[in-house]
Length: 617
Image 1 (cartoon, rainbow, N blue to C red):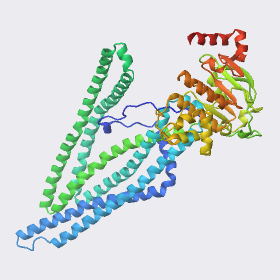
Image 2 (cartoon, one colour; image 1 turned 90 degrees about the vertical axis):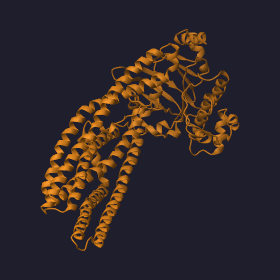
Image 3 (cartoon, rainbow, N blue to C red; image 1 turned 180 degrees about the horizontal axis):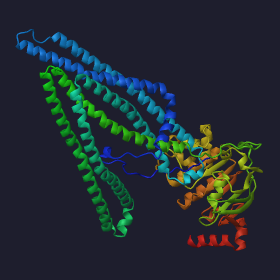
């Protein structure tokens, strides 16, 4: 196909506001099902994941040993000072140096293992993201048109960008964080027991208190976070709406009403935001207070045990470090739980998309000719169709179109003009009857092969960021520069191109706004001429240009249609007076057909449409 329509996705407000880390994560409808699919998908990385697990545990273990070794250094210094006071040899700096060297070695090894596992996990997550985007891109080309009709472009784009990014990011963070947190809890608990079971019991008893306080705060703060996000969306939507239509707002003197509406929503956002922030802000000082009580208890008991010669001074220092470390992974596991929920929700949406039913790409019984051998005879044989089975919009449509003929399809909005084109290109299959090309049912062609026979020029032009030469060559990628320029001449756009800075090498911007609407249309016609398809579909595109440009576009389209079977969806009836056949549609049926003069002589519905436009013009 020579032309396609690409729409900009709708703009969205931010998904997360201040303090969003405390918000409940979006949950998957079927967490276990999504996890099973993701696990199967990650199966090819099992060796790498096992390596990551080993490296993460190793890094954590080496890190956990650090406080214990540092405690030995503290004990050596303390004992050395006591020895010196008592007239002994004093501090053994050589021994302390060896301990500190061992400590540095432990931390260096821990850092290296962490670096390697991070590298591997980043490779896994980004490879998964790359593969998923590739699969989604391939899937897009296999989905039936009704999938896109039921969803916005923004929703589909979100699967490729937001969901895949969320999955990759949370996968990268949550897997290593979960392993590290579990290993830290187990390792620290063992190290604390090795120092003092009594002090360990005291430290562990603080956890239920902390857990109760965290749960209490989260229970009351999360509802305000949810309200905050909800009203943040309302504020964003209202601001976008008002700014998008500010001219209309001013025209109808609705500024005061718009301000009142905004103030009401903004007040709700303010109320929910400060309550959520206040409650979540309480967590840190409360946790700090409880933690400090625990440190005091550990220090007092530790001092008592040291006096009783049960533990060394350095063990108290090590134990306090372990207590600090012990509470961190518990908080991290709660965060990992949120990350996993978010990752599974994203994975669920991605896999739902990949599991969508595809349209049949290949014909069961192939036509005896290829698409490049098609001559262009088209027949609609008693075609009936409805987007929903209970609502038929095309009833018993029949027409025969000879090779190289110019056919105009006219009628009021909703008559079925665009639907007929969609059926012709097999974006949808007919409900009953058949559409034939050169006597063969179009269902006997592979969809890709069938569409290769069609060229299309739409009212909404599509040009991409690139040179003019590249945009025209898009119609046939193997075309030479000379063939591109010949196509441009046939489309009456060559002279205009040569007047531009850079000529054919001039770069079009993303919106192609550095050329006019009429010039864009001529470029798309040049592209269609270069593609040299046997059947053309033209959505007349002269309604938004001046009369002089319209004449040039009409000449270019006449050149494009020479020798090709052409279907023109006509809006301005004055432009299809020279069509070989005009099909007049109303309510899905052909109610009149013939050339312009014949239809005007019938003094029927076509004459009414034509005269109405003439009077309006």
